[in-house]
Length: 562
Image 1 (cartoon, helix red, strand yellow):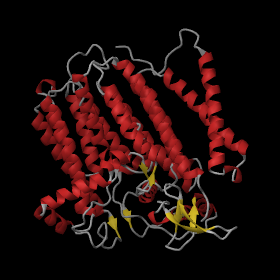
Image 2 (cartoon, helix red, strand yellow):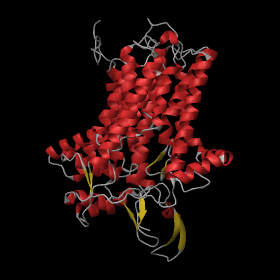
Image 3 (cartoon, helix red, strand yellow):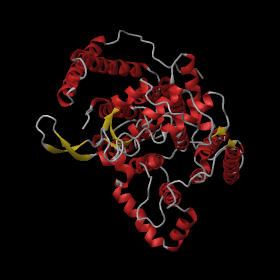
Image 4 (cartoon, one colour):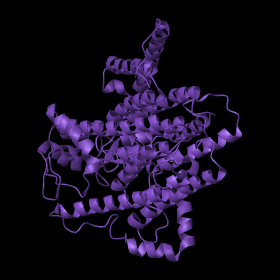
């Protein structure tokens, strides 16, 4: 079979006039956006108007050229991977250093690995520029107690209320000064604080190898601590991109749904950070993509098993549930050598062995660490909390329902970034709409490969769909219960520490099941090929808009001292 090229070879003159017109329209949009920034955020007092306009125009025209590049690519998987790569790079630089959840910890661990240290020593220190970066940019600039307050106008002396919710301001202490990113970067470049920092409480190696490799490349190019951070993010993004491309390549159905979830701003926010959630989410999406295949041969089963073991290395125990998903497949579709239950037992043994090996390694090669404090403080007690849940199941059910209600069932928090403190309302609104649109597009009749006409997950038996929905429910409740037992004070009426990113695979699988239901009950007017084109037109701009709004909230404004 002849291999398909990645890009089209033009056989006739391209309609260049359309693209020239698109570039002109994009340039005008860039001028309008620059004017909006200058008026609404008073950028003229900080930057040259010509510089602001030039950057916005260049970005808008660059988006058109990126669309041309994607259009010339061959195959949906290649087009989707290009969109993920381009939008992911935007998130790498739109998100300030250390703002992703626990990124300061992950940065120190990956940097240590990049120096060739594959053990864990609490007394090991870092270079001065690394210490200056972590001290100046500790993460989580937007704190709850800085969202509202009173300020005195320096000219009139009038006391007025203010709100900086959702913008990059940080207050040190209850009555300390409110500072912005410019202050933090000034402290880093001036090396104002080089207090030594030591290795963090993190005992993983494999999930941080991509970040460490990116940092090695950055140091070879002569970059310092800040350059290593961005190098690590790019290395992590490369792994996320590879796994997503493989998932789109292997999927035979629901590729619009998969692309939508891969391009959700929250997915790219994590994929373009130093968090191991990048490879974790990529493995989730790969396993879900494999479920859509018409036939599960030995190669497919082996790939699923590798991804399943991979997610259990980073986050064990709860991810053992993924061992059960192949059991939901109809027997007629399972063509791998051996029986399904044998593969399930082998995956279970592999996951437990990998988990045990990682825990043994993190214990044996750990030096000079004192007793590690319980996560969440002394009020957290896992055994006491577990006994409380078992003794009061109805009350715990109320805690689950109340936590879901307070957090918009987490599907309304797909635009919540940082350490749960950077809400972008527009993305919170458009995230669920994007998933719904993906389900509609994914419900198009037929497969991505017209010669394969056998039924797949798109038209499952009702019993199979119920099993998949049951998996979603059990996984979501399991994630919430795990946080309640390990992170929440005993008997607390809400669950602490939950974030929407934990539920991304649940949302993806639920959207796939919904697409299957729509395919059975509606008469779609779209072919799968046209549905996939619409998916690219909808979800890639949505991701790019997410990066733009994230940069606006962090870097553009308001940046002032109250």
